[in-house]
Amino acid sequence: MKTIVMDTSNIYLVIALYEDGQCIDKYQEKGNRRQSEYALTYLNEMLEKNNFDVLDVDEMIITIGPGSYTGQRVALTIAKTLAAISKIKIKAVSSLHGYVGKNKAISVIDARSKKIFVGVYDNNHNVVADQIMLIEEFATFKKQYANYPVWGDSEIVGHDKVEIDLSNNIYQAAKSVDYVKDVDNLVPQYLKDVEAKKIC
Image 1 (cartoon, rainbow, N blue to C red):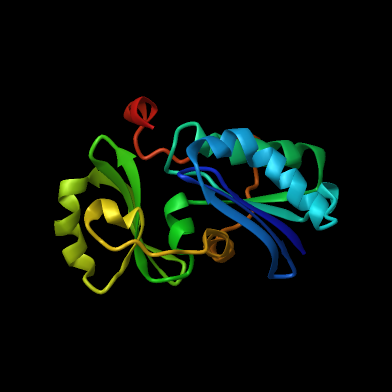
Image 2: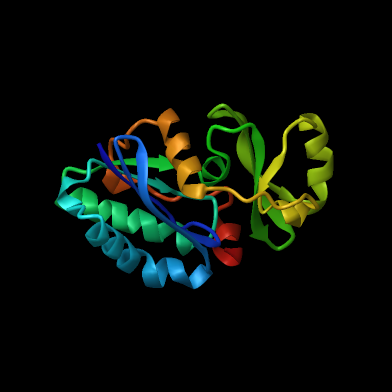
């Protein structure tokens, strides 16, 4: 089983290749512009470096937000294109879930305008539905989950930054979701509609 993992939805560009459950190569780097400018280039370079023919890849795992309005669409567009020209199957994971994977944690992503996206996960189970809230509301929210560490953009809510392997967490998170049946109609996950387009 050959797998491509990609996240372009927030501040990182993440690309990884897995074969039979083992990561054979990965790239993770901050930089909002890298997603749109380099995602396809870096993917092609990684495939060539590891002698992967894209037509032989079995599945692609992507994150679909919440996150950057533009960033969410980069990996999605690549996935849709590959699905149209090959046998590849697509799995789509919440970006909040992707930050924590199968771990027990509160996932936080900067939504800008003094707001954050928040999700609570434990063993690949979504304990509380992904949501958006004001940063000032987080301390009260956190009291309900006192024994959960905070991952992702944790510093924005006053918690220490936890270094994570995003490609591995996304790969683990994908074990809890099914393949997308209708790739053509797959869209980014917005937790706010009009407002999301204004601030992301």
